[in-house]
Image (tube, rainbow, N blue to C red; front, top):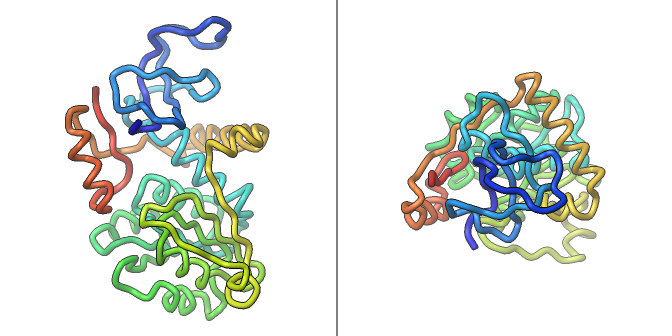
Length: 266
C-alpha cells in the first residue's frame, strides 16, 4: 500500500495503549504502507507528538526522513566537525534535512541536485552544489577535496549514483551510507571492495534500525527533539495535493520533478 508517513488526530486507542488519548495530534509511520487514506492504524511506538504550532503536513518526515538523515550522519556515518559530506538527492525530503544537520555539526557540505533545484539547496546552507544529472560528480568532489574524496557520502539515488558515491568517498576511511534506490538497483562485488572502492559501505533502513537496535533509534529521536527545541530543525514546507490527486503526485515523484516532501490532504 502506498504511503508510510501520516499525521493527524488520534481517533481511538487500542487496549493497553498508554500516553496517547483521542484528540492528540501525532505524526507516525507505517512501514507496510497505507497512509494514502483518511484513516490509518499505527502501532503506538511508531508515533510521536506533533510539535506545538505545526500543521499536520509540516511534520511529515519527522519520523522517517529526518531520523534517517540523522542516523546516516551520526551513529552510522560517524560525521565529525571539519569533515566533508557528499549528499545525493539533496533537494529531497531526507536530503534537505541532511544538509541542515550536517552544517549544524560543522561539516563541509557538497550537495548534489538537478540544476533547477540548486537554489533550494544553497538556501539550506550547502557549501558547494553540483549537478547530479549532467556533471561529473566524482571529478567535482575530488577537485573540491584536493583529490582526497569525501569523508562521508549519503546515497539514496541508486543506479549509477551508487558507483559515483563509492568512487567519490575517501579511500579506506571514507563511509558511504545507502538508504534509498530511487534510480534503480546497483551491484557491487567483493572484488570492487578489495581492489577498486576501499571504504566502509553501510546500509540503512530506519524501520529496521528501530526494530533491531531500539536503543540507537531512541538516541536518534532524542537528539532530533533536542534539535527541534533548539530551532535547528523547523516545520517542513511540503508540496500539498488533495488525496484524490495521489495518482498525479506519484509520477512527479518518480521522475524527480518534485522538491522536498509531498503531502496528500484528506
